[in-house]
Image 1 (cartoon, rainbow, N blue to C red):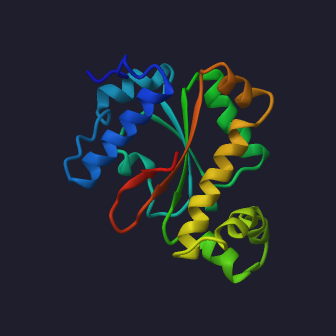
Image 2: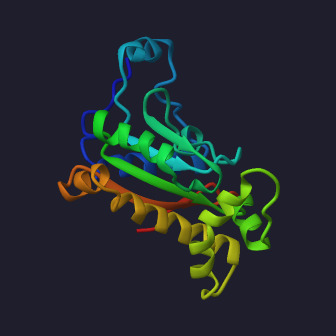
Length: 199
C-alpha cells in the first residue's frame, strides 16, 4: 500500500521529492507511484498533497507526469502563463492553509505560447489581453537579458509570481514567515524534460 511518505514534512523535503521524480522522468525510469486502486480508495476520505504546482495550462507540461507522481500527491493549479488572480490565489491559499501543503512551485516552461503572444503584442479576442498584461513585468525584465527573450521572460515570470505569492497577505506571507511554507520558481524545458529550480 502506498502512503504519503512521512519524511515529506517540510518544503525542502517536498522539493527534493519533486526533483527526484523529475530525474526518474528524464531518465525514463518512472515508477508511477500512487496510481493504484488501493491508493484511490485511501484518498476517498481526504487528501494530503505535499506540493502545490502553479503551472501553465500548456498541454505539454502535465505536473504529475514530469514529476512522476500519482493520485493525491500534487495540488495543481494551471492557467496559461502560470499567472495569478484572486481565484487562483484562493485555490493556493486553500492548499497552504487548510491542507498544510509545505511547498508551492511556480512552474514556467520553454516555448510558452502565452509569453510569445505577449512579446508579439497579440491581444486577440475576449480575455487574452488579461494574460498578456499580467506577463508584461516579466517581459520588461527579460528585455535587458542576453539570450532567448521568450524563455528568459518565462523564467522571469516564474520568479515574479513566486515573489508575489511569498508576499501575499495575510495567508501565504504569514505561513512563509512562520517557516511553514516554501515558495520556489522553476522552469521546465520541453526539449530535455528537465525541471530547473530557479532559486
